[in-house]
Image (cartoon, rainbow, N blue to C red; front, side, top):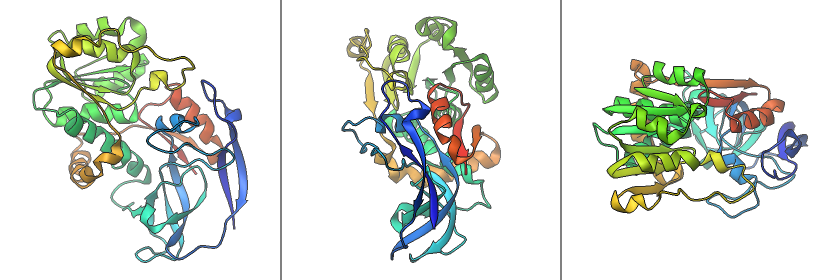
Length: 331
């Protein structure tokens, strides 16, 4: 049986291009005991994948050249040699960027496509949602009444952070985004204020949106957003450092926030995190998110790209901010 895969052809220098990717057709080996064969339905592209394209040591190994990329995907089991999985089961797993995937049983979890569509398990009910919930509640120690600022707020994680904060009782939620349409969407989702970071200095726009300061900053961007947040932080403010998309494609070192010393007098907490360290919150999170989605308290947006061969273009578009909500590729 043959599979179509997207391989990493070369490592990007700065911004990735389609030349860094290559489509391949490969022969799949025979299925072994403890494995399942999955026909993928939909796959995720995510900002963290950019870091894995560099040959550097990090919290997750780099992608290998001339080998398929991987990432979240949902598909249907079409062959099983693993206990607990049957043909026809829908599963979420980590072998995206291909139409057929051989997945070890321990690397797959069954999902209910009757309860939610496939892409939801890559977004609001999946790693994206868990990231938002864990970052806000466990990392930033959110408390009812907090004023919350979210950067990259129209993205998959950011849009959920803001809505979760409102659902949990934030007194005010502010988001930054990269276009007037995205700003308008944030207000529709229940953000109390939102601004386009192209319209002026972030620090100035944040001060106008949060004249009494902020208590929590969920950082998806880094750079001038992090510096602005530090400047607006109230005493004992907390910063959950989830991503730094502003510098993922930089070829030069990014300077630290020039006002970092303010963290001392304000007694701020800045904490980086990766979602894998908060897997124990998944069950709690999914129960709450299922209720929020059912009640309409939370919505999730998607930008859908059709066709595996267009996955590189979808990823590049994600890095350029062309998505609203979760960027997914149907296969």
